[in-house]
Image 1 (cartoon, rainbow, N blue to C red):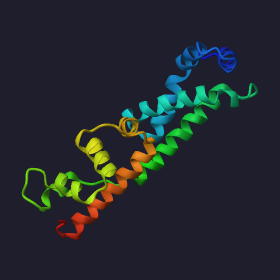
Image 2 (spheres, rainbow, N blue to C red; image 1 turned 60 degrees about the horizontal axis):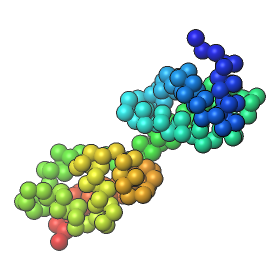
Image 3 (cartoon, rainbow, N blue to C red; image 1 turned 90 degrees about the vertical axis):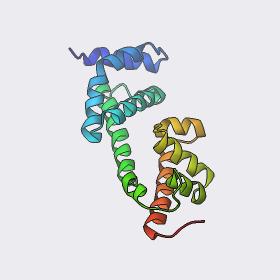
Image 4 (cartoon, helix red, strand yellow; image 1 turned 180 degrees about the vertical axis):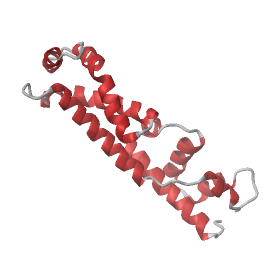
Length: 175
């Protein structure tokens, strides 16, 4: 059963520097946080990633927590904001249908899209496309590799995919 008083004490302990209190905070709030995020995102894998971000924010922003605040509400508002931010980023992403890309012909080599991408994309855009699309790494993983934020990877990926899409829709060959 959820005990708001114990959660308040755990938040106070965490604020005082007792990082062990984070275990209790996570244990009693993780389901609520997950459901709050999932309600907005509707994807399990992304919801789990956001959950990790939420608890990192709780830890990093614990000094902003005021004891008169309701701890459950404070944590859930962080979760809601993180989920809404991710939802907005997801809506801005460009979706490219791989089957449509493969139907277009530039060069009858084994990998015409990769060849096209290597010619028209900047080096970092090419690496991001290959990592995210071909290797199916998460944007977070690619960000760690390239020392970029997840949103930076998403932005560059969208720019690169837009370049590819425009090139394909234009129907011109790129030398």
